[in-house]
Amino acid sequence: MLTRLVETLARHGPLSPEDHDAILSLPVTSRRFGAGDDLIVEGDAPSQCRVLESGQAFRHRTLPDGRRQIMAFHVPGEICDAEGLLLTMDHTVTALSACEVAFVPHVAMDAVLDAHPRVMRALWRSSLVESAVSREWMMGMGRRTARARIAHLFCEVFLRMRAAGLVENNRCRFPATQTHLSDALGLSVVHTNRVLQELRGEGLISFRGGELNVLNWSGLEAAGEFEPGYLHLNAKHR
Image (cartoon, rainbow, N blue to C red):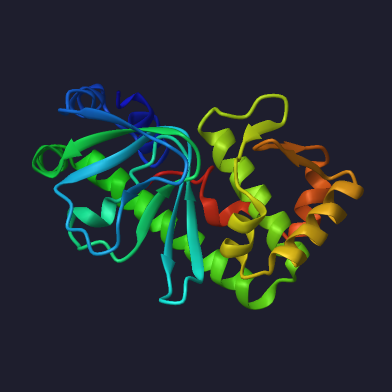
């Protein structure tokens, strides 16, 4: 059940065979969620980690009047609520698509982290990369045009899905609606729709049926003012 978690953590730091075995031997229960189901809710104090095994999810907060801000998208292999190891959840995580989630008791996860410092370091590094992604989103919300924001998000999702081994022929699953994109990027649905039509018309992407097809990577990078360094996908481990 936790093979994807091992692969994800291994991208963030070298793991020994013993580290691999310790992760794979963690006690796990599995549960399937439908699109729109909450995996964990703001205010929860979880006793288990939620590891996304398949499908996609997003983290968000909602104001009392119903306005929602999406703050991140999760891809398979990621722990959706690592904050819950130490904190009460201050946001909600919801399934973007049908997904399978592995539940790992905190007690067992803590024991592995204590006994395997390389696993601890890899998890710490993955959390730092999440912070880097949040800073990049903040920059985009504050300074990029609507066109650049949407193109940038597509570039980011595409590279993260490729790192997870989930891109084939320049295509990957990304079942976000125009409302999801709008809530993530601080745009109206009308504005989002207009930009999507522009990107399609320029031959940069195809985006329909929950699938993103990148037709012109260099053009999409330019449109999004995209520099992938903040994802730290090729950084040397220290």
